[in-house]
Amino acid sequence: MPDLADKPKIAIGADHAGFHAKELIKKFLAAQGYDVEDVGTASEESVDYPDFARRVAEGVAAGRAQLGILTCGTGIGMSMTANKVPGVRAALAHDIMTAHMAREHNDANVLTLGARVVPEEQIIAIVREFLNTSFAGGRHQRRVDKIMAMDKK
Ligand code: RB5
Image 1 (cartoon, rainbow, N blue to C red):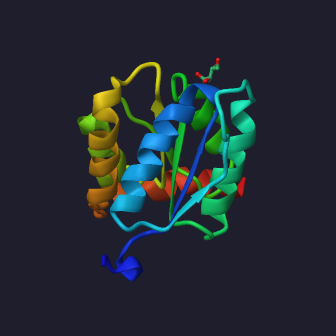
Image 2 (image 1 turned 120 degrees about the vertical axis):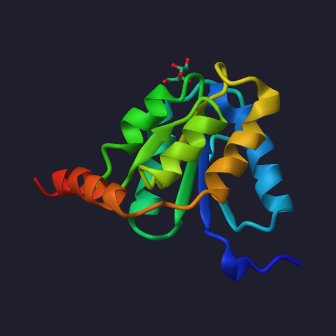
């Protein structure tokens, strides 16, 4: 049995275009022993992505989850919305490299994915890379601090 105490709690959300990808990711996370909160959506019926991005982002900002994952058609609307919430650093990743750098250099706390952009067979590899990469700190901390200072204006 995996030790849940070692793993971040993850909030996950999607719109209709990202629903299938969300289900794949949720299954993967559960198999890996993560504690997952799914904020919806629950089907491929058309919905508005900001509603789900906001729920996940506010959960991360409030500390109810340590990380968030959001999927929509392109990942763009999810990242735009999530980054409106103070404390959130949402990164749109298209591949393993961008998922890695989002954590290592930018300390992203929300991953957004475009289910109509990323081939389905690469989705889990991107999520795994995001979860398994640590923030490098150092000069990157100074830069992230400059981003976060903008929340205070
Ligand atoms: C829905 O058609 C689409 O606009 C949405 O999933 C997303 O791509 C928005 O950024």
